[in-house]
Image (cartoon, rainbow, N blue to C red; front, side, top):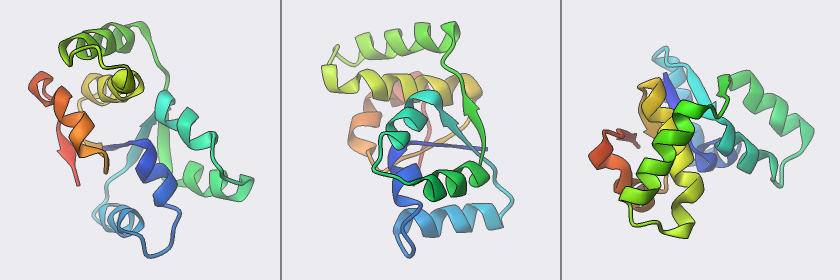
Amino acid sequence: MICLDTNFLVRGLIPGSREARRLVEWAGRGESFCAPAAAWYEFLCGPVNERQVEVMQGLVREIMAFDERQARLASQLFNAAGRKRYLRVDAMIAAAALVRGVPLATDNIEDFKAFQPAGLIITE
């Protein structure tokens, strides 16, 4: 299972993009995909159309609800990363991957590096 960040959800729909190629490659190896509710929310903010949402729903096996365990971990990650406002949603996404125990696919590597000391694995 690979957890998808927003940029993989959005750019994964673009034929020939690096993200689309990676998703096809991973799926070909038998990987399945999940997405944190926070990333799914950002994806739905678009711009995306209904067909694109349906395509991504067909690929993503699970949209993980943001629960108390994730909320607690996200707040710890956010605080440990220096309380940088732009990392709030990223901390939520990282917490989802950590709680689920799966790597995170993201192109936003610089921001997510702040969460690697907590055990976040970033896949490219």
